[in-house]
Image 1 (tube, protein in one colour):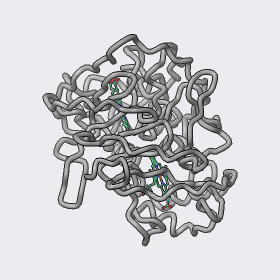
Image 2: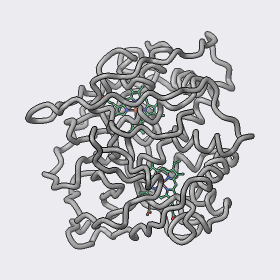
Image 3: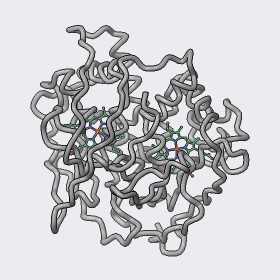
Length: 373
Ligand code: HEC
Ligand code: HEC
């Protein structure tokens, strides 16, 4: 599989590829493996695993305040932005802050205007109940509605998901077809005020796989998982390239670049989360900075044991026992991966170049410039 990340059409926003936003020309859909008419229970279960651990609930299931803090509202599982839920416009953001997410994580504002996460339930009228498997795979691979329709806006990370193997995308679709239909007509996107954004360069061609690498080859599988789940979208800083923002490849997975200034806290009142181009994130929790995942022993994961890594993702705590990890690190989703998959990710992370980069500690909400919440 193509190892290198897509560069020129991607902006990290909430760890999400923004590249889709600006896409004028798109890669051709890849041929998908043919599917059986009624998917086997195994395939549906595998699809459920991929949807859960792929973070789809993070955006496609509306979040709500539960007893233990924010959580996806599973009574509205995967039904997208609730029709009729009016979201306030974000306050005027100063650079480097670019965009905001509603507290439900279903309404997203940025240079592309406002987008709303789609209904992925099996409802025919408002979800994907009428889609074919080929249309679903083409959507995930080309970033176009049903493969040929309008380009999907950020933060849908299709540029990440298009790296998934045919069998994994097909399994996801098999599972989504079993998700109880919820009738919810998600609003159409709202374009930005002012002139339209210039079209982006086309995304790089990638080689896609029919079958995902097996855990018997942990490094290959780990690389596949890191690329297909978008760890780099949050954990790699961006630089301005000739075609727009791109990954700083010399700092792959090195986290927020500590050589630069820490941005001032943006206004967050009435808004869920706020994102700049750098991997820093502001919200009710204060400001968090994506961690250094390279094997540097002092500033990255070099001194971590495999078990500490697994515990971190399972429990959402630093090394499994330290402080609680802050949003938007999707440990609730990733922590549900099997031991074999988490071990594979750790094995791959051991092989990437170490970068010395001491990511700042998170700032509390009361930090200077914060809104005091
Ligand atoms: C960071 C947020 C985010 C994540 C994570 C995410 N999506 Fe999306 N998705 C969106 C948004 C926003 C849209 C709507 C974009 C638009 O309207 O242009 C969307 C649109 C889609 C569409 C297109 C629907 C249509 O009608 O064209 C599909 C299919 C989809 N997502 C599937 C998935 C799957 C499967 C996952 C998990 C593997 C996932 N998404 C994860 C934000 C996200
Ligand atoms: C949506 C953005 C986002 C994505 C996607 C993401 N992370 Fe994170 N991650 C963060 C942020 C932000 C932090 C820092 C949280 C904090 O300081 O509390 C973090 C922290 C971590 C930590 C904890 C480091 C420590 O010192 O405790 C690990 C480990 C980690 N991420 C691994 C991963 C892996 C592996 C993936 C992909 C499977 C991934 N992350 C994907 C945003 C993200």
